[in-house]
View (tube, rainbow, N blue to C red):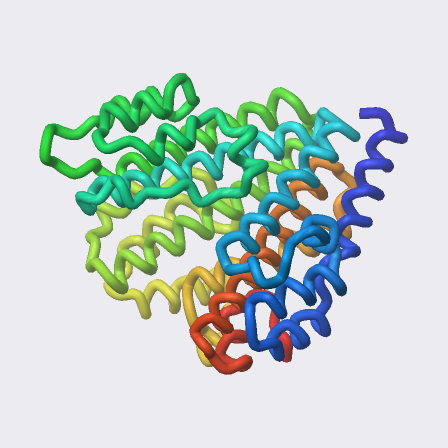
Length: 348
């Protein structure tokens, strides 16, 4: 990229991030009582107004509101790809492939439960238009062979064929999830290496390695807390990408005797500065707070457009997750302070 194009991408991306929800916005959203009220607030007071202008409040519910919000992120990336193809296009593809993995795994969960007919594609219309999956055919699949036909020539199809189960047997869900994620990461790392200048590629790789490393820690913690998984089993499910931790340190954490021991060991690493035992609620919440803090700093301090775009995408995904948590909390009539505990963006 020329210096002029690079500066333009940095400016455009930071301007987009400047429109994010503020702490005051979150406080006001937490004070609302219904999903239509949340939709009306987002329509009149936030950067989501453009995709909510023509939506009737009475027709709004959690599902279609979430779809609209996630669809906006995809549209923003598509717009950025038109503005600067070299940066936006690759992140758009990455988010689309993540979405396809989510849809495939959602079908497999229904299939393994013996209720494939309960699968409904749960994604924005914009995703449906650009996905390599035939989501309509996927929703009509009743057998694994029908499922493979619906996947057609999509990138995931060869992987899914490898895991075709025997009749009457469940699909190896964990193995499929691991292999799909592995192929996605390998694919994106290669794109980053082949596309971006070294300094930019290194920063993007760092952010992705951070994301993967936090996923590894979440996987270890959940396995210890809920399943009592052995270290040997765990090691076969961890990705060999590292940010703050070495392979030896990650293996040592996988050897921990309990979930509490996992947290203690995490607290002794560079991640310890983010760990507060009194404030700890869920491992996913903790991991996302780390991502939020590091990506926010990267967005403001990096001079590399690709790293700034990737950081902004991550932060907007977190913002949408926070809005969804508010909506879910309102649906289940939780107190605002309880909903606030589930949010990455603290309001206190």
